[in-house]
Length: 326
Image (tube, rainbow, N blue to C red):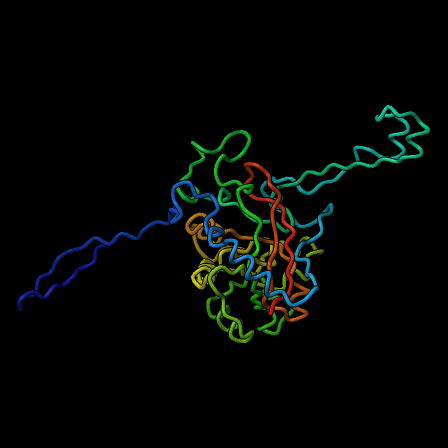
């Protein structure tokens, strides 16, 4: 808060008054789709928009934008989140020994049986963040609060299960390729100018309703867990909001956080998350594999993806695909 002298000239008389200017603090946004809205910008999709994109498909080639899940993969574990783990709960030999089916040795030797279980943090690998993921001052997007809407079984509002399958025009903003580097430098914060210059070079304009994915090149070292996680280049609050202002209804990146790490501002350590998810109701994604799209210079495509319907979860794994369009 600070005081500013304001000089007002009225009828030739110079008057001076003191006005108090208050810098507004960021807060959870209210949805233009009403007090019960739980999907934010995804409301911009409809049957007509989905059909329009599907009609523009020009190739049978499918680009898989997901990473593989495996023990030791990059993941958020620095705050105590569980890493991806897989284990056998049934094996062909074990089934014979324990006869868990009750069918007897001969049947179990003839019909072999394997079964696995997995555990992981819901924001592991290629995933989408629900609007419940981050909040400001105790509120998530559209004013829902953890006091009223978060139980022992997850969020009762704005969980990832509320998201519909996403079919929209996808745009790749290949900043790394535009700058002619394999990967942007460590902790490089992508600017609004970077976005605009890359789009101009690609001869692409973002439209209302687009899914926009930004390539930093970080995915090229995904299998090197330590290097991939450390000081990732990414979006800043300004560049992320610029994409939304241009029309993006979902923003993602090929890095661990979408945000540049560490944050370029204080005291917010994750400003893209809180700005897009909490203030604007725009879902974000991380760990999107854009390498093949970049190699083939595919900058616009039909984006098709759906998260697992994990009730009450603030995020979920997703295996999106891209199919080139006219």
